[in-house]
Length: 402
Image 1: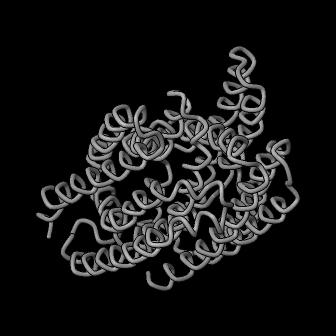
Image 2: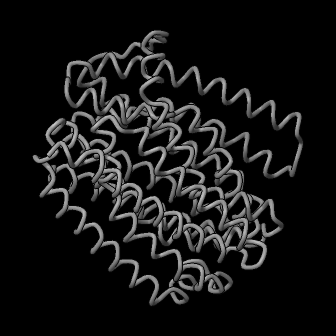
């Protein structure tokens, strides 16, 4: 597990660093208005993408980690199901843009970004995680983000915002092709299959995870949508810049979770096998992310001005609040994996719903008066509520197994 974590974490950190540099270049070239349009379209697209991806990865990883011989069959059937959903999502997006109209640039961005439904559907990322082969993921991640950074260098004005969206989709397509090629080199040719019975069984098991993904997206993207809906669209660009300083650690956190998941899956049903190590790993996550948050908060204004330009420095107060989600995320990172391992994904969904409701209530109350700062406060409160209920669920529903 440690080897997997180091490989995947290093690759994700390098890829995120490249993406962060690309985002900085885009923020400077596009300005806060065009960046806000790009961010709004990306947030809207992410909700539809959840319909395509759903919670299949967690269930497939859990099952394949226990029986590696099922990898090829699972991969072929999930590819077929997701491609079918991607075609449906693309058609729905095109119909919406055609009928609803709306701001021209945002509409075009939605159309370009809708291609990502297919690129993500074709990405067999979960397959490598299930068999604990993190090296291909690390290499492909760095390569695709290097290409995105190269594209960002050539974007010089707000009028090129569509090129930024196209570059993002193209890099996702490159990653999908490379991972598919690598997987087929090991397991032979993949035949895309639409298996109705398999789809029903998978959806029946994964729907709580899917709902959790939707709710999780609401914690992170709902605020962007609400800022636009409540007349604060001008603050979206600054808020996104602040959030990017925090989400730079998201891939590392994801690598932490993904590296531990197969190990946790094999421990079922004896929680006592993993409890001591789980505590130490959680403590390490809290300390590391808490330290990073303190550093970012201390130099918030200088960091924003250095990365994105003087115009973004006004978001220092927002960033100083947002950094507190880092230690909270470190504390609950593995708790969610434990719940899925013990077939309690529906409990995780319930816990997350409490966090989302907290986020919505506080956002509605604070955004009219505080704008993006209200979004930051609501996000920290939502993450804290999510952590508390996750910890209580593990203690009440899982700890009794060990």
